[in-house]
Length: 140
Length: 153
Image (cartoon, rainbow over all chains, first blue to last red; front, side, top):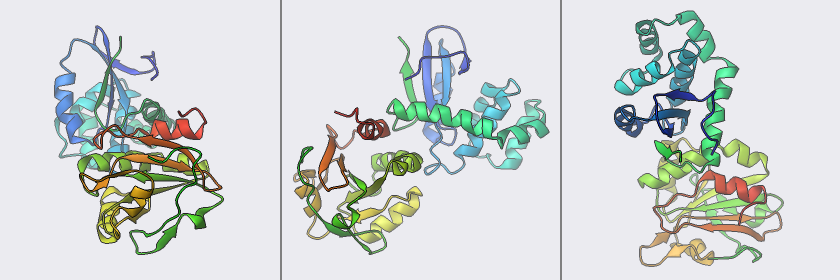
């Protein structure tokens, strides 16, 4: 598995924790409430399983696009805090609450660059043998 | 469990749509048999969902992926729709588990297959095998890619 890198999504201080998570996954949602409180550098890697959670690709693209405006983890927190509202109008509301430029978010979340960035994380998870989410790894 | 180098036992099973799929008709392509315990058990759901996500990459390497369990074609149809998977699911239903037995993947005590992967080459010879230590343990897709890239054990 690739070690934490500067272009990973990282938050917090302390020993690193790599989390492969699916933004459409209810298990991840409850796990996230605990993971986000840990005294650790949380490294978030995208692992959308579209066949299981059809909305996952859109949610990961939205988080990645929010990240282009410096609000990646805020969008992740927001999505996991309320899994019941994940259609496009809800995403726009979330973006507004986070003070994001909506037009830019819309363009970014549909861009090839964002899709490729999500896929990069997903493939590193596949290569690491991830079969269920969330998959949490302590980095020694 | 069958071993690499052995000829793969031929079979003809019906898929989720009732169509007959036979191994001998797939000569010339690699075939990955994914034996799994049962439709609708939570762990299987994850396994086939994960494979679905990388199916284009596996198929691009000239491999046909086939799921096999002892469930009926009707259960397979519903399961395939639930998973949103394109992987054909073969019904090893009557005689129950006959194909899983032929490959040494059948667990007599529980009446279904263990979670096992069998990669068969273009000539119908077993190229690589992976058997899970327990049905609860999911073989990651990384094992498939390692096997296809020739670095599998």
